[in-house]
Image 1 (cartoon, rainbow, N blue to C red):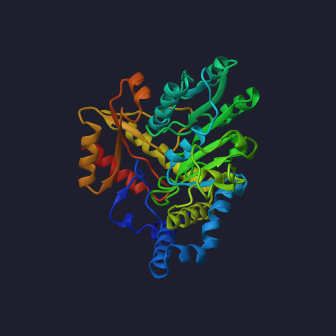
Image 2: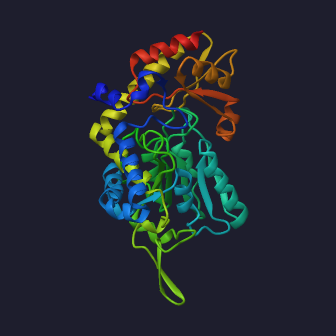
Image 3: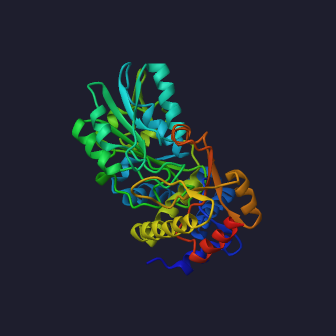
Length: 388
């Protein structure tokens, strides 16, 4: 059970603004803000290097916090400046060759798909698009049937940015293990709202951001790479943090996932993200997932009863991302109208969901995603204004 009063007290902006966790970020809790600003003050007083030394324990807690959150070892975690770059560090490090095939899905994040296209052009890899099942999610049976002798990688997004769909990540993991394939999972939208265990899922790589459901700072991200495949993914670039120049003509990579990091990074953000993870774990990921899922279901039910409104979320299992359209009003126009009423939502257009939206003949949707700090009364107020 979430202590909503305590959560709201840590989120003062909620007093004046109904904020549905949109595509940009969730509201930052006071303890996370304090952790960041305290370190920035320390940098102001001591300088960056000295401040880093003085805060070494807080900085290093990043690895243990994420290891506990995701159910892995601390040396399998890397701090990267954002989710896309974290995904890139793993993908571009794979030794894919001409003719190798990658399985993905129409819900894949556009930035990831662009990387697949670039490597197709550069290296000659082939992209196989797995069809959707009757729920709109990855068709697991079809995926397995598409695996051939040249299939090397499965790369899917756990929760797409354009809707409440939750892809069957664990079932995909069983297929990857059965066929000896590397499995990359983009968890940018799922970590922080869904209880995730990388060993249960069976993914080898998982990437995400700090600024969404984890309620951390912008400009922060994380990467998990399983120890047993780490030597198969060489960083696309290295520096004096990720590698050591051992002799004139040779170097060695860092022993763990820090090989995917840069020496220079946003230390205050790293501390803040570690604090955000601890904040989520103190509440409890099971409680967070239950609360978010329940509020989202309530919101979808209410929207479904509004004349002219169509809820667009797919999936057998759904999460806190809620998307819809209203007949006669463009999604982008509704976002502006609601913002004038102190309701913060966003919209997603076909540029962010090119394959998925094209197949469904959708141009754009309103995204009004709930988080555990939202209330039932806020949902009621939101529905009143959507009807106007």
